[in-house]
Image 1 (cartoon, rainbow, N blue to C red):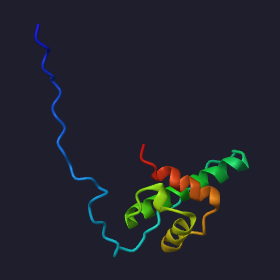
Image 2: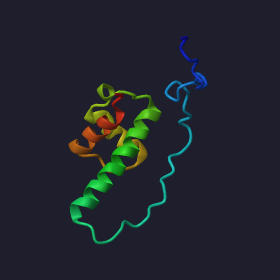
Image 3: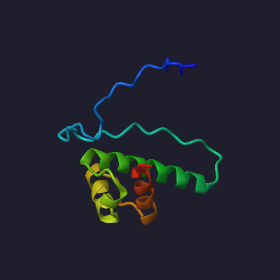
Image 4: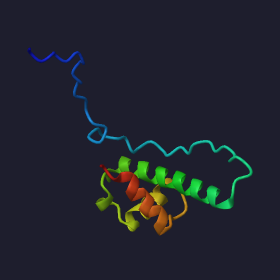
Amino acid sequence: MPAAASTRPKARSTQSTAKRPVPLDRPYVPVQKRPLPPGRPREWYIDHNRRLKAMRLAIALLDLGFHTPRQAPDEVVQLAAQLIGVHPPSPVTCRMVRALLQTD
């Protein structure tokens, strides 16, 4: 018996966002902040804010052309923080940024 033909359509190749030029002449516009839910332990708020900061920094690094964790030592992450106007990240936050940049 012959093998059944696949009924799934083939995926079209698209241009990766990593290869597209990103206009850096636009000013950084921060997202409007919302209040956090009350009643959580203090550690939850600290971790939550750290994750948000790490995401913002990872996005900024991707926009600047840093796509791998090896390209983002603590100094580069701290420079990105200066560019987007946030306080310098701690070493823990820098590690979180590199974890977000990993491609596995």
